[in-house]
Image 1: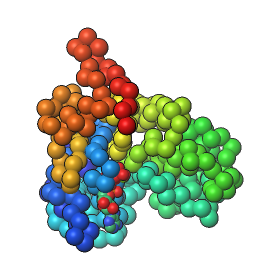
Image 2: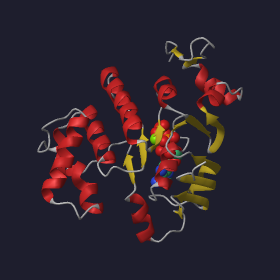
Image 3: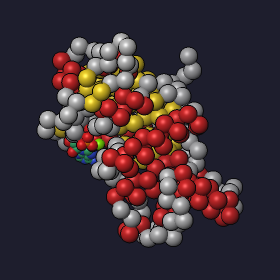
Length: 263
Ligand SMILES: Nc1ncnc2c1ncn2[C@@H]1O[C@H](COP(=O)(O)OP(=O)(O)OP(=O)(O)O)[C@@H](O)[C@H]1O
Ligand SMILES: [Mg+2]
């Protein structure tokens, strides 16, 4: 099997008295989609920020393309970032830049060999891909929540990265926009053959796009495996978390059905 682009080994992270990650280890398989699930506040976003080198672990290794982000010098961290794209949970757009300039930002940072016209073509293409054609000059503060999310998505893929990290791509979106984002992820998965890591609360949507699922609970990895392995796991926490959201697929129909939400 190909070497895993991301390998977490015994990762520990505390903020003051709060232990957020408590010895997390797993490999993210190359060319596949891994979903990270788990209750709110359980360290999912913190885990992703370790992968991009924005947070360093107190203990353990975070190997990304062979570089240990735990102790890599800034230059090596930068070289890793050039090969990945990230959509932050809150969008993390620069309000002082226009919509197009936000998407263009990683290209300026990592691809100085491209001319201004080449950059503009790439951005226009990305805007079309996320169904916001012609919005290059739109001031970022004027975007709606769903539009911001899509701009974040375009920025995450603009450098054609090998590894794409999406933190809650569907949260806060109406069902139609959310479905459009799922369809876009499916399309990217098929056309780009990249490695995806997606954090999500949207269990049903996730089950459809994920090859592997990692579940975090109270700083520990409580389930890790293929989609089938995890959806059939009998770990009580996994069952409790999935049970509210899923009807297990029958052997004849591998697609899970949604249960009405009871909260
Ligand atoms: N920079 C920080 N300093 C202090 N505490 C932090 C920091 N970043 C995260 N935390 C805390 O770490 C815990 C895990 O946060 P994280 O954002 O990873 O949760 P999450 O699993 O992504 O939750 P959600 O599903 O709500 O997005 C939370 O209690 C959060 O307040
Ligand atoms: Mg989060």
